[in-house]
Image (cartoon, rainbow over all chains, first blue to last red; front, top):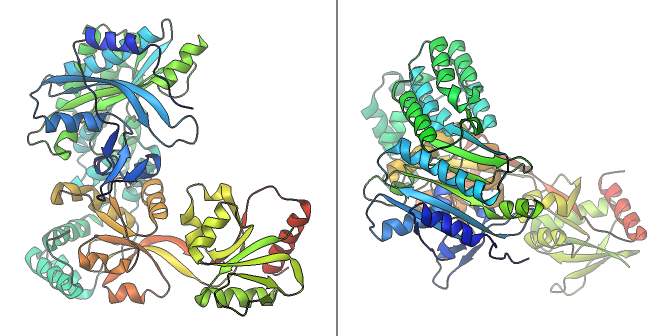
Length: 372
Length: 231
């Protein structure tokens, strides 16, 4: 079935205009590399890939955030800017059509992050509320930054913090990472000459040794991982190998991840947790509070928002807020969004440009409207 | 109507398949002319033999164009995203054993496990301005193992059609996923297999296409499966 332009498209465009956004269009055919680079290889089997005559790998636009950001960079546009879009995206799905519509807003370069986060949620909420009048809407929020602050405040080694932060949003990965840290798998023994250098912490000699082995293998010392980097990680890893995740840190993490509270009570829940664990969440908690206040100033009803401490997306460009909007009667979320402060740099922007945005699945909205 | 069994058209895999079928009481009579790709089973007009390349067999069974196929499990698993829905592995035949493994340069002294590789992949982009590259001809198996099983998202697959083990030295990839029997090729290329880096312990298998068939054909297939399983 070919997707049809949604009959409520005009309403969405009017909503975008009223909210002071700039409507943009991006080509349907896109270079595939940025998507695979950013979202990972997992995307490969879900997008439509093809090749140009010159060998460039192309795909049908699977989403809008990356092309909108790339356009912004290519146009050397000033910030702040709020881009809106409405158009078809293409994905291979087991169920449902492969072509469907999405609409959303990407807010790039707004310096007041609490305000920009709140506005993004408010825009998404108002859009869905307008399209599905009377529907029972709920918003779930998570925050990568708060989780990272907890890891730092617990005094975990830097490598562990990074590993756990990467697993944030995936309960299974987080569980297996925690199990590994509490009871590390036995490490393969190092060759004797290497283990002496490691034990002595002799970075320079170890690095030279690695360089020599690289040379023997015919691997360039500059094309990929470098001797220096391998030596540093080996020393760090060996130092950590006798360290176990302390039981109280593990139970603090478990307590944190189980926090689920209405947003108006979430600040207290986090403060209560920090008090019990004997840690301070400092700036992350302040930013959390500022965003919660900005949300109520943006007119969002208090009772529809829930903070879920374990809610996140395991992709490395999400840095703070993530959110989802659902309505009763549809299991899948109608909208998803989040803050991606690292994305534009990864895509090649010369300066760091913060960003926050959301996207609405218009096919899901349409089926609910049909059902009203 | 006869059921079609596809077997490898050349090499060790072909010889081993013929031997295994003979042991199960099925003597394959090949055409005198080597370039013909059909054969018959002595005394059985209800089974036709198609001689195909090992990779083609996986595809043909997956598409339901042949009923049965004997080929490597690695090729069967790699051939389709929904392989389980397309065919059933009805017998494991015990020859053509080889492992699909994740191998890294030996000089990566700090990397022994997939957990280590996860750390390295995550840092890679920041340090080197590109994602960690994995050379392989098994992109489906790789992607499933890295993304679904180990939660490693940020890496790039470089499709390699031959001599994958040379990719790190050639500078076209950092890590490889490849098939190995003794590990000697990996060793000769100064590569080591991660301790939890075995993706698949592969061997030749009999795959049966999932489709509706007349009862007579089902019976022929059941008989064949039984014989190959040693019943």
